[in-house]
Structure formats: structure tokens, C-alpha cells
Image (tube, rainbow, N blue to C red; front, side, top):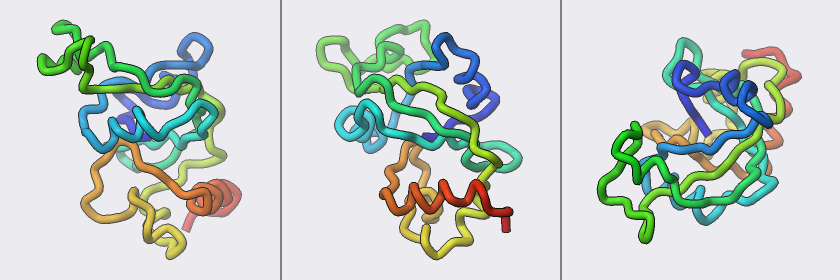
Length: 152
């Protein structure tokens, strides 16, 4: 899951009560479907900082509440308001995540792009702009092992 560090970064999550927050504002149907239908309580998630000097994986979160309607879509005062979304027939969903830990180092996008083992990973494929992307267990394990390896 990715977010801009100046909007909501891993340090923000770490400071939240119980280090937990809802992941709101996703306005892409494919990402919405993943949150609504595929993300399960207990799933581990990489926190990825995007749109910054050096984009990359900075931490790990856990899904602590499965998909439910994104209430920010119903409130005209909210940044992510969507007049087409209705509480009785919501368009948008979110999950709650809890901070687990920082990664031992930044695992940069540039570094991730250099590994053949990740060539099928949605994050490194050209043109992929989703804020939420699935990983296989093999990809997750490979990335996790990079923490102990020097970049490059």
C-alpha cells in the first residue's frame, strides 16, 4: 500500500492511537476491490512511500479490520467526498491497518526494479499507478530478505 509521506506517511501511522488507522481515499475500482474482497484480517502489508525524493518500502503494517464502506466518500466536507457514493450503496471501501515496524532500511523502487525475481511484481511494471498492489508470497519473502542486504 502506498501513500505520500507528507500526506500520510509511516511516521503518521506510528503516532496514531493504537498505531492504527483506516486507509481511506482510495478512488480506483481495482484497488477498491482488493480492499473490499481480498484483504483479510492478519494480512501483512508493506508501507510504500510514493511521490517523494526516493520512493520505496519503509515499513510493515497489518490489516486489523477487513473492508468496510469508506465513510469519507459520504461527507461533502471531506477531501475524498464522492457524491455518487451512498451509505446504502457505497462505491468505496477501506481497511484498517496497524503499524508493525519500520523496515531495517529503505528498499527503494529503483532497487526493486533491478531484481529479475520481481519482474512480474505490479510495482515495478511500467505504467502501474495503483495505490494498492498484490504480492505473491514468493515476492513478499524476497523483498523481506532485501532488508539485510546492502542496496545495489
